[in-house]
Length: 167
Image (cartoon, rainbow, N blue to C red; front, side, top):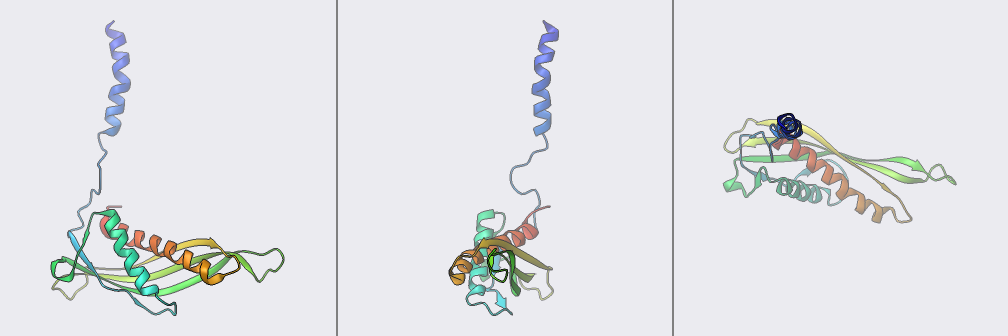
């Protein structure tokens, strides 16, 4: 009977041991709790891209929840971003016309600086990219309007991950 009890307890002990190192939420304390995000500047010729990227990065920080987005007066750090590239690369082309793309990969690249409030020296400087692919129909502008938010969301996720996560 005692051996049976040991045999039944073994899987339970192994399961508990496997969960012992699990942590809910972010493990890493980035050293600041609140952030102000300035409107991104842009070197690219894509209308409204600055506003869309800025808004999307704010939404990604809010979704993550590790660092609270706030106004300038209450912020521990300030994030400044600069859109450096906006590229569309064909992935697939039409069978009838090799010059007509049917699927496109869009990449948005930024450089950003995080500065502690009241300091002039950057806390961190880095670059990030966000990419998304989408199919092109008869209206390139409409299809592009669907692809830009997807690439901006990936970009925001990379920035949040770099600033808030331990890995």
